[in-house]
Length: 104
Image (cartoon, rainbow, N blue to C red; front, side, top):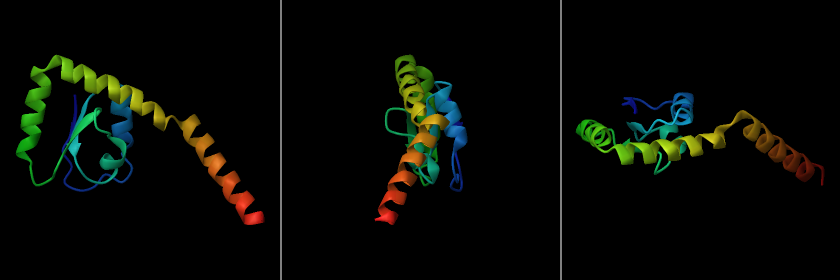
């Protein structure tokens, strides 16, 4: 289990991608990059105002092995979307499209 209760927004969230790639279910604050990176089924996003929910979520993951494994497996699969090679290819495609649009 990867637990990161933030008080302020994480600007990119590489740490979330790394934890997901390791197959860890994530429990973190619903803000910043966590909302963009941690998808439903790969972790639990907790509203900042509900800090007690962190201990509840953590306890449920500790007790429920199948939930922990399911979230971890989904996290590992989702982390592949952040593979540098895939991201570079997507950026290249976007820039090519923008260049073609600009030239016409």
